[in-house]
Amino acid sequence: MEGLLKCSVNYVPLTPISFLERAANVFRGRTSIIDGPSVKYTWGETHARCIKLASALSELGMSRGDVVATLAPNVYAMQELHFAVPMAGAVLCNLNTRHDSATISVLLRHSEAKVIFVDQQFLQLAQGALNIITNEKETPPLLVLLPQSDNSSPSSVNSSTHEYESLLESGNSEFAIRWPISELDPISINYTSGTTSQPKGVIFNHRGAYLNSIATFMIHEMSSWPVYLWTVPMFHSNGWSLAWGLAAIGGTSICLRKVSPKLIFERIAEDKVTHMGGAPTVLNMIVNSAVSDRKPLPRKVNIMTGGSSPPPEILSKMEELGFQVHHLYGITEIHGPGTYCLWKTEWDSLPPKEKYELKARQGVQNLCVEAADIIYPITMEKVPADGKTMGEIVFRGNTVMSGYLKDVEATKEAFKGGWFHTGDLAVKHPDGYIEVKDRLKDIIISGGENISTVEVESILYSHPAVLEAAVVARPDNHWGQTPCAFVKLKDGFNVDNQEIINFCRDNLPNYMAPRTVIFKDLPRNSTGKIQKVMLREKAKALGSLF
Image 1 (cartoon, rainbow, N blue to C red):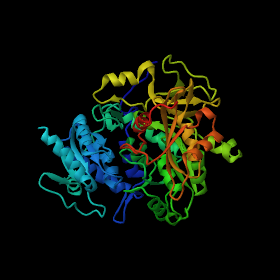
Image 2 (image 1 turned 45 degrees about the vertical axis):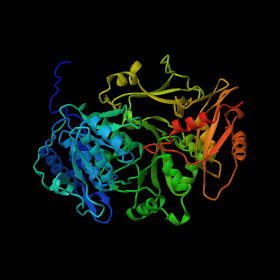
Image 3 (image 1 turned 135 degrees about the vertical axis):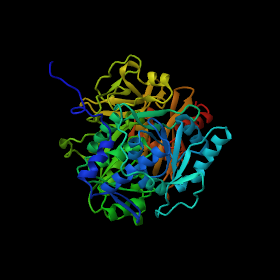
Image 4 (image 1 turned 60 degrees about the vertical axis):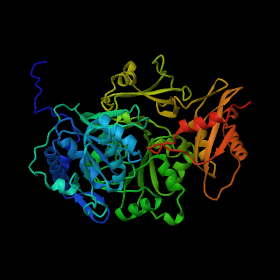
């Protein structure tokens, strides 16, 4: 067609940096962040600080494509780094604060980070990693120490360490932002939880970050000027993209260094929080909190949860406390949230049990996902939408990662057949909504029947004495495998394994009920997920059932 022209007038690469540029104009006087009693900035101030920080990074020698790492909790500097690092043309790499020094050293070397911003709380952890790198005769990244919680200067600054506020103030307020040359330029690297011998660094690009930021605040039903309480770590998929997305709608971030029910209720009451996020573990923590830790909510608080499917009983109790739960499903490789349980008004009149079973589903693709489906992983054919047939969840679209850092083969394997393969099993219901059933590696095959550990765990969580539960396969000489439940009880409760087994048999088909119950604390990995690999080993060590 004649007359078409692509130029700077009608095409600009998509990047979440533009959210901050707009916020500085549209929301200039609105509060952008509150971090304790001494830190409170507006969007105009945040924009000015990010410009100077980007300039300072440039003066440190950061050039386009260089990696800048962080090791910090949810503090104001983390918000600023999400914008300042890409404004300098560099790539942000947020490291999980639950890792040990050895793991951090591996990730720093793998990412080739040239600078690491470290919160005082994790200085010893970071120093251990830098020492390992030095002992290997390699050059460690420059260390920049973040302020203490009262915004005073860190006490451990030496000649080889930069201090955050001093570094920022050294920047030029007239610095010219280094916009991405292409919207597919990398903006961040997020490491998945796995072995340190083969780290998987997921590369996000500016386009995907821009689009998923929009999708996430839409999923969360955020309008202009929300007040968001940070319980989701910003190091986890860039805070589910909201580290950038809140700037697009003039939101206020409420920082929380430590997640506890008491602090959550305090911040909601004092800061008039409208939205928050959290894994099902956080929801479980809230509903089982001491009455003395709770405060009446000034208004209904929207809470977005993802990860393993929250049991319907947990959803019900959260809403009794005044929370409105939005359920999503995502994975790091698709920038976090990918599907969500879009609520239908016709479901409002359903009986509570049926309503919360529907709410526990993972739903439909978000607006910015091109396609999400359930397929047979071998044949790549779609499973029937019967709510029974299990297949693998797959995605396609602009919010899928660019690839795994330095691992072309792993990227090709993840993208085989024209889809991104999640490794998660789900069913599709006749209305098109998906429901996650398990990880491919976690499914239990007993006498030829597939048992979803998620379904069994959901029943276990509905027992009044159960605080946490995880189910894995135990070898069985007759059935091949049977469910083995690891259970942590609530304080003050004392039940035996037979009561738990009988409860499951009353609420599940007999073949799905655990034949073994072990009471113990559940091991978790660096992202807080239950380490089923360790539990499978424990179940295997028990020997086969006869």
